[in-house]
Length: 245
Ligand code: 13P
Image (tube, rainbow, N blue to C red; front, side):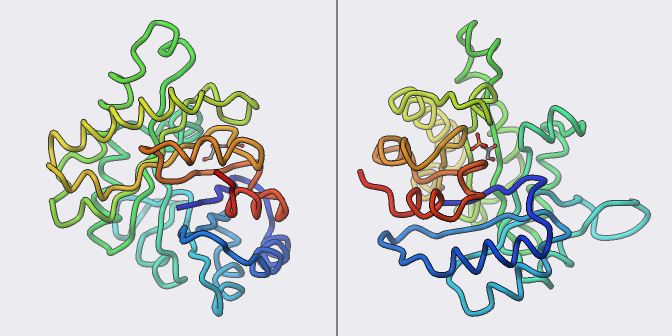
């Protein structure tokens, strides 16, 4: 899977323009391509993606079905717009908007119950990396997010390993470090769900771009990428999608 997280970029009109450019890409891999625009741009994106293989994702959702939650968005409305994936627990949401392992778990369960697919983000801070607890942090985040997920649902879950220090900084984990951390995440999933863990797609995210995508994605444990900045420019996103190993 190659997913673009457009964060708080691209108005509805700009979204239509970028998707029009992305639709011209001849995909040379069998990767599933997903774009995740701002909530306010999802309606325009959905219409523009009607005759396309590109899938639509949202960047967040609320864990309740409906009600007095001013400013929030529910799963049913996302589904109505043709959204298939929802990014959950992105480090920016954990850092700036009070997202916790508990809310990520509630959202994961709701998203799966409603027939959407979560892209659950996990990742260690620079300090956690420096004191050598990366695997503990990401495995705990993963297991906490998946608490209560059934064995029938686990294959619909996507995990994105995004080291916090690598997001938007131009610094990436080395391909082998990313591979090892993702292997640890998969092992943690296997402890709970057995060999279904092998079917869970685990992506790398954090300054992935047209230059480093090939090396990262040729690692055996890395099943794709969650791309921020480089997914906002069609030529760069195209090179990530059609990466050369
Ligand atoms: P960048 O690719 O801009 O570092 O962002 C990564 C990310 O946060 C994707 O969710």
